[in-house]
Figure 1 (cartoon, rainbow, N blue to C red):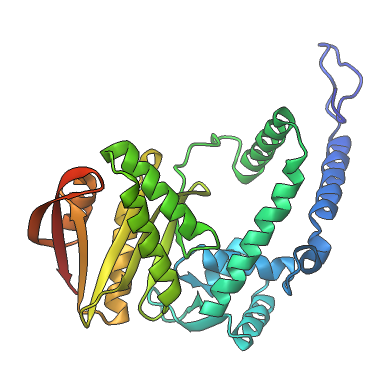
Figure 2 (spheres, rainbow, N blue to C red):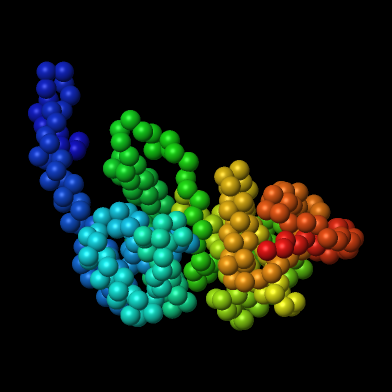
Length: 328
């Protein structure tokens, strides 16, 4: 029985009651807004941001470049109100604004290192807050809740003629949040062990690379991207300074098996190349092994050239290492 069920009609079916449907949906809205603390969002998550400000930071963080006009449309905000909020962010050194490459009449908005830190903190605390709602639920009830949330999203976000999965999920590249670098170590180790038989020495190598990146990170020269597909982490890549002057190095390209075929690897490599070029590097280098056929195809497509290779025994396997270079 539902809240909208009226007396049975001639066919025996419940008579629709639109007013009761509206009341039920409004009652749910009031309940959920109070539950997540939307009216006191900053205090709920112990941050200085309102819900609207947090949504703006989220949108900027989940797109490598975003225009002010895009933000206004995606968040349904008044242009003047959005401009004032962006001005506050600029005053607090959270964002920079400049001319859009796509359209000089538009503003391109990017997060500063302080902005990335704020966005990462918001993401971490939001995850914790929502996770706390699920912690005490039995597994069956948790599954029902998540399935119901997906159903609500599917029904209200799309027209009735469009199936929920009619459009393929969008690949989104973003900067790393707290925990993402650790995820890169774990997934690299697990995937390379499963697909190529690499031993623990490979995980140790990846952990050192990630630790060195985090300790020496300089946003002018270094960058990491996390790829998401349908909201799930499915890939990553790093661009870091090399020992030679003017040379950047592409490292730790990763695409989850279930995400292959969606263009994730191509976008990660292309974005890495674009960043290295814009940062002023003259060359982008990488080291890989000949058994990584799919990755080698991506590098060739992006214009990399194989300059040398040599046999070696590493990670418990006999391999052929390869050096690839791209002049920028």
